[in-house]
Length: 137
Image (cartoon, rainbow, N blue to C red):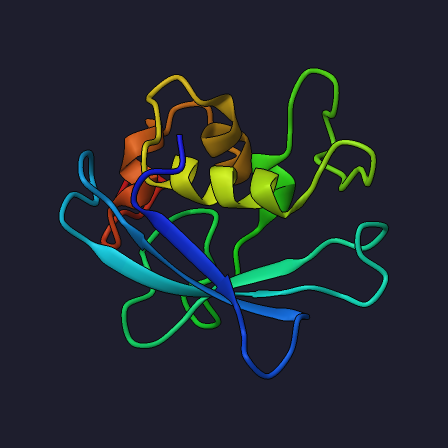
C-alpha cells in the first residue's frame, strides 16, 4: 500500500520530512514527485502540512499549482467526516502519506472532485486537464 513512496526525516530537524513518490500507473504513470512534510510542534493536535517541491508540481484539483500545497480537507472527507477536519485520534502522518498516493489514482465516481468544482455537469476527469474551462466554453 506504500510502494513507490519513500519518506525520511530531515537531518536538520525532526519537524521536517522529505519524500518522493514514483507513480507506476494511471494518469500520472512514470512520474516522480518530491514533497516535503512540515510537522507542527503541536502534532498530532495540529495537522502537518505537505507540499510538492521544485518545478514538477502535479496538476491536480487538490494541489495548489503555485505553492504545491495539498488540500487535505477534501482527501479526509468521508461519511464519518463530511467536513474533512483533521482528527488527532484518527489521523497521523502515515495516513497523509497514504492519501498522497491516492491522489494519483483518482476514480471517476469520486464525488469530492465534483464537489470541489461545484458543477454537477462536470466530469471529474475534466478537472485534470489544465486547459479545461467550464461554463459551456
